[in-house]
Length: 193
Image (cartoon, rainbow, N blue to C red; front, top):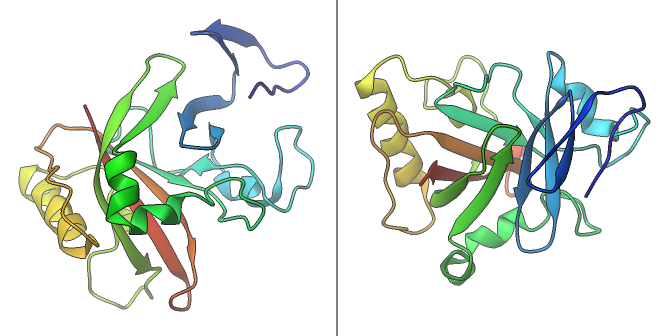
């Protein structure tokens, strides 16, 4: 996949072209996806690389994340045509995880391999609900906060991967829509090797 905007400065790293707004590249079993970091990421829900309307949009990184965040939250649509994060819910199956236990996520600065720690169904909660909200865990306040997040991820997991994380490890969390409940989400959390 190579896409860029006219006028964007480009760099070639590891055989991939990058433009100034592109921050990450991830591959799963079928697709490679670029990820965008922006002050207003929701605009990519229905915008393509050319900044034109696209129902499927493109995956994007949560606006509260930075390159140094403990956990990069990456959102993408679950498209019926098989694109974007359509294959993410396949991690519901332990046999799928056993065949593909590693997610590759590269940035302009480095290539990365992440081991799947947990795959689970969840939802977007109301603000008044007092519970662990996976989408609010970006940077740990301290070791106890990090350990609490890992404990919650593992307790929600559909199966035990045997992978855990220690304070200081970097995570990515891939998120797509799920339809088991209203505002449902399917989530895969992975730890950097």
